[in-house]
Length: 247
Image (cartoon, rainbow, N blue to C red; front, side, top):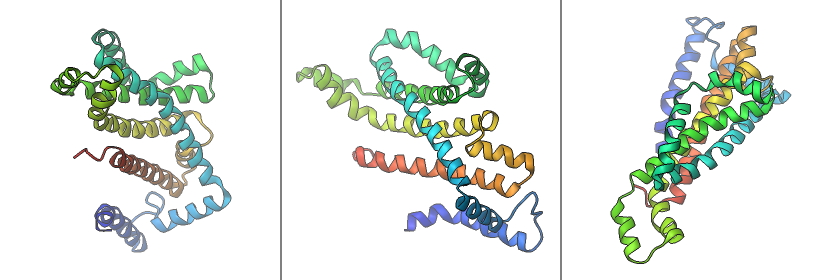
């Protein structure tokens, strides 16, 4: 409970101060809608089903893109770590994709895949893939070679070597990559919804800005931030369960 209090005291204090300034008339409600108004909008949109629909749409896009990108990214990253020729071939391409602003690729993907969900999913997957692959590669690079040599001397071969040496040593780096990839998937999902979707939190932000319903705009932004935090800590909890030996 103490840890939770330390994590929440600052945002809660900001919200209380924000509400107090609104009550005192020191904050323009058009540009800084009070938290109470945002809460009322959240309740109204929840009862109508609009807000849960936007959240489900964003999470579905994020999950589809994350899974489509993280799984092959993990495999290719590990392969690059153990096969120098593969690394020399693929690392420059992956680095280039990683450095390219993802939204700049979206028009090209829409030309190739159409304006439906496929282009959005591929863009999210590309963001997830590059981060996961680079962290998996670094995981193998940072592995102490003496452990591999010792296992080989004791007769470990191929799958036994991977299962007993590579996988336990690489998991902490892999989970760091997965956490970052999950967060980036959410960012790209919301970003792409801003420009090309009729549902999702990004679409809600864009429509709220166009109609100047700032309480809904702030609500969508805060929900996005809250989802990102929940996903991050959820994966951290899973990481602690799966790799308890990590310091």
